[in-house]
Every structure is written in C-alpha cells, then in structure tokens.
Length: 512
Image (tube, rainbow, N blue to C red; front, side):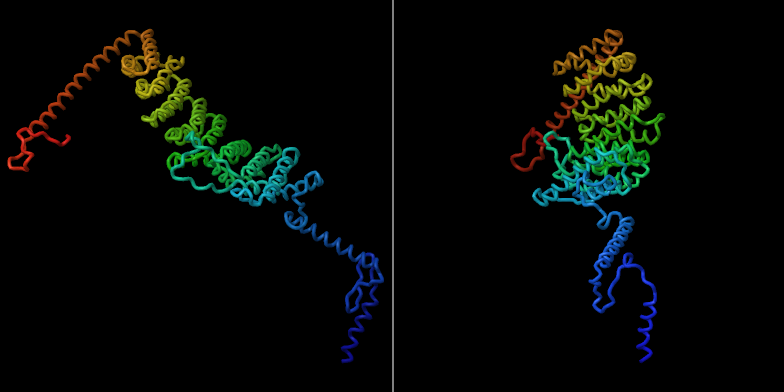
C-alpha cells in the first residue's frame, strides 16, 4: 500500500522537472478537481481560446476542400452577387442553383407563394449573372446547372385523353399553357445561356449533358405548351451544333420519335419543331450523302406524309425534303414515288398540300429523273384535274403556270397528253366551276399551239373511247332491264297456298 501511494508522487516530481513552453503558445489549464481555468491569468485564458478557434478554422477549411458543397463554407444563396468577392461568386452561384432545385406545385397558386417568388427572384439573379459576367465555369458549377435545369424541366406530362388530337390540328383547340412557366422560362434561358458560353469546353460539359440528359430533353418535345416547344427547339439546336459527339445519338433519338408517331400513336406535339431543327441539320450534310441520311429520308420523312395531322408540320416536312433533293437531285424520283404511294384519295385538303409540294419538287427535278416518274405522276394529276372539289382541280391546273414544269410537260407531250386529255376534255364540257372551265381551256390552248396534230389525235381517240363507253353502257342497261323483267314477270305462287296471296301474275316483293 505504501509503495502504491508513493508512485503518483514520484510521477509528479518527474513531470515537474520537465521544462514547460511559454504560455503564449500553449493554453494552460488548472489541475484542480473542478477543471476551471486560472482566473488570475486572463491573458493565458484568452490565448487558449484563440488557439482553439484557429485550430477549428483549419479543420473547417480541410473539410470544405474535401466536401465543397457541405458545411458552413457555402455562401448563403440569398446574398447578391455584388456583395461577395470575385473568388466567391462561383460558390454563390452553386448555392443559388441548389436552392432553385426545389420544385413547387403550381396547380395551387396560393400554396408556397412566398417561396415561389423567392425562387423566381433567385433565377433572375442567376440569369443576369450568367449574361453580364464573362466567367469560366468550373465543373461543380456545370454539374449544378445541369442538375437544377433537369430537376425543373424533366417531368411527366399528364396522360392524353383517347380522343385528343395533336397540338394545332384543330383550329378550335385552345393551346395549353403550363402554370409553372414563370419558373420554366427562366430555367430554359439559363440552360440556353450555359450551352452558348464561348468558353464552355464540350469535352468536359458532355459529362453532364450526356445521353440520359438528351433522351429526357427529347421526350419533352411532346409538351402541349407552344412556348416550351420554342425553347426546346433553341436548346436542342444549340446542343447539336456545340456537341459533335452527340450528333448521331440526337439523330437516332429523333428518328425513333418519328417512327413511333407514324406507325403507333399518330399523336405528338413536337414533330414540326423537330423537323424545323432537322431542316438546318440536313443542309449541313456532307456529300456524298451517307446511307444513314438516305434511310432517314425514305423511312422517316416520306412516311410522314401518311398521318392525318400532316397539316401541322407539312411546311417543315417539305423544307426537309427539298433540302435532301438540293443535296442529291437523284433522290427526286424516290421522293415523288413515295408521295404517290401515300396519295390521299379522299382527303381534298391533303391533296392540296401534296400538289403544292409536288410543284416545289418538280421545280428542282432533272429531265432524266422526270422521265422516270412522269407516267404514274400524271395519272394521279389527271384524276385531280377533273376533281369535283374545285380547289383541287384548280391547283392541279396551276402546274401549267410554272414555266419549268410546263417546259418538262411540253418536251414529253407525246406521253403526257394522252394521259390527261380525257380529263381536260370532260372539264371543258361539263365541269360546274367556271374558274376550272377557263383554266382547262387555257391548258388545251397551250397544247394546240405547240402540237395541234397531237391534240387532234387525242381528240379522235377520246371520241372513239366515248362511243365505245356508250355502247357498253347501253348493253349494261338492256341487261338489267331483262333481269328485272325475268324476276318480276316469271313468278307464280303454288295453288292452295295462303289465301290472299294467290294471284295470276304476282310480283316479287323481294329487292334483287
């Protein structure tokens, strides 16, 4: 026991002989049982607190370098950019972007109204900063921008009713406007500004604008809000121009959307905008055209003439087709054969669109390509010339007003004239519309001035066919009269049948 009691005393004596450092560098604590600082040495206590604070700051800086988006190192997002140093503006930008990643329900305008207004103000600050400041974004800033934009714009659209039509197909349908557009518009402008940065390195940014991001962006083209479609068109066009590595993926994604629209749903709101983007894309294709590009023409653009809602995107579709033909004129016969395949026999409005597109294509066609398709083409045009719908007939006659098309027709009149003459002759005799009558007479006059013997020959064949048709019609009429006589006069009921039905010459009451 005595040995045990002297051991602590010996340790204290040994420690007391060790020299101590100055109190200015190390904190001193009293060794009393209550563990309170020495109140008689205020300077020592103050130095102790300073040392502890400095060590805590070192630990804080080390943790912020490892985790830059956590802890108190981040700047408060509600601070204006002008109130922080230039070195801290990127940190403030990331903080504001993280704040704007919060999503609010705009179906109830009164819900979270203060938070919505604050978020909108922060979005405006971010956009103003990106527009006014010539900054170089860091990778964390790029990641934060893409994350914020994705959180806001990538969303599921409500399911469409079974009877709903694509946007713009019916003039009576009012456009739908997203109630969250006050935020979405600013988000799209931020995304567009981010992609448009001249200092943006696509090799780094592609890690954040990746295939998943692009696929979700393409899915947004089914939005019913026309304002969003315009923003999407600008964003996708800018991405296609900036990121060459993503171009094949974008073309494949657009092709898949078109395939699904043509062969499955026939309902999509962004076909016109996608085609408008591809109009400029096609104009940049290198020659000779790749097999992939020709497949897009034959498998996507030409079948797009089939859906009923073609009126929504026909202008953009015609532009894309014309761009292909200007690149490679040999494709003209392929396109026109495709139009004839999907020709609308009973839809007069689609016929007018097809005739307008045909005129644009025939203005670019070469003579050798025209000779390949002139027979099936003018068989279809002949049906349009004497159409009962006067606008279709009028539009078909207008082809002769085009100087280039008229030259092609007259050079090949030996083949074309016999095909269309019967329709022109019928129009000149019996068409109900005065305008169509006048146009028909003008066309016949053109043929007579160029080749009168051919017109007389066609006239003789027409009269011969007409007389033959008259004989066949008369023979058919006599046959039907004979059948009616046999069916009506040859029926005699059996004697002893139901009373009241016995007649010598009973007629058949059954409709034959």
